[in-house]
Structures are given as structure tokens and as C-alpha cells.
Image (cartoon, rainbow, N blue to C red):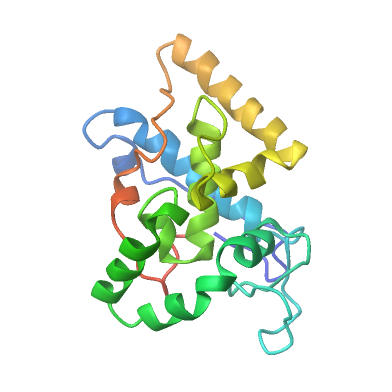
Length: 199
């Protein structure tokens, strides 16, 4: 959750009943969700967006919290992988069935169905798959090119390795389990493109 208007301070909370659905971190669900939500904080903070620029004055992608900076991860994703289908996406936002049709048409561009909700969910899902997948890029689809975009940033690769190392050391002690990429329960549905998932 965004704490300060300038996007410099964020807080993440986890509902304890959610963490224990079925069993603690059942199937890696909690870990995947935390990584997905961290993807939002990583891509929507003040190093990536300028909250002082209004949507009307923004020449880059505008996710709602502020104007994406030119080199922002979400700006690169939107320009490189969404711009050519942006008008189709905007037309589909009116109904769940239209959004389903949009995903069906362009599914090879998204790492999960939920990623097609909007660019904010797209990049959070790309980040989650980037972190949770053991190997690198699998093929040349647009979805895989988005994962490559993550690998193109050494700071993200270092962060990925750090997260994976911490999860691995805890799983050896009977704690966290690294989930399968795209295993999040939300991954197999389309969200509301106008509502963000808790960030």
C-alpha cells in the first residue's frame, strides 16, 4: 500500500487467515503472492514514477500513481509489448467477456491470464514468474520477451537471486516452499482492470 503521496514509502500487510488457508503457504501460495505484491512496490515507487506529473501532462505510461519515468520498468513493458494492442485493450475494458476475448486473442503475450488485467498486473506477474521460475527464458513469445526484459536489468537479476536464495534456505528448514511459476490462485482469472490488487 502506498503510504506517501510522493511514492517514497510503501507498506505490505498480509492477512493471517490468508497465509494459513489450507495450511501455511499451501503450494507456495503465500510466497507467490508476496513476490507478486513486491513486484508492484518495485515498479510503482518514486524511483520509477513521478507522482507530481498529472495524467494530462504525462508523455509516458500513467498507471495512476504517477507518470512513469522514461527508464521505468513498467514504461518499457508498456511501450515494447502493449502499445500495438493498446486500443484493443482499452475497448475490452468494458466487460469481463470482452476482457476474456482480449486474453484469448493475445494469450501468448502474457505469462498468466491475470497478467492481461492491466500493465500493472502484467509487470507484477512477469516479476513473480521471473523470480519463481528455476530456469531462464523459455522461447521467444512476447510473454517470454517480458521475462527477458527483467534479465536485461542486472539489479533485477541480483534481486531475483537474493529472493530465491532466501526462500531456498528457509525451505531447507521446513519453512517456505518456492511455488511453481503462475501457480498463484489468481493467475488463472482476469481481474478488474480498474481495480488494483491491494497496492
